Amino acid sequence: MDIRSLSAAQSYTSARSATQVDPTHEGVTAGLRNTFHDFATTLQQGEQAAQAAMVGKADPHALVQALAQTELAVETAVTVRNKVVEAYQEILRMPV
Image (cartoon, rainbow, N blue to C red; front, side, top):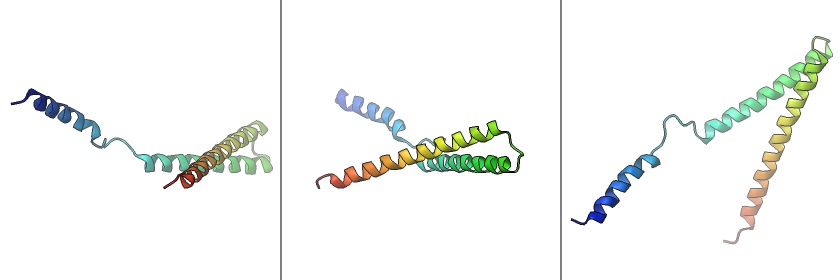
């Protein structure tokens, strides 16, 4: 029996567990879903703060803070969208 083949089999067995799916890992889809949900929640909070400020029920400081968070969320979403479009255009320019 060749000792190298035994070593290769042991290495394969130990490495195989690293390629198995982790059942506790959410995955990309769940992560994106959570991100979009957080984005929508931030927008809703900004709208609610603006509506409360219009009727005089909100502190102006709270309104400014909510609008700043909303602005940051929108800017982040636009930046991510631009990067995705750039990547798509770069893929289209690749020679086949």
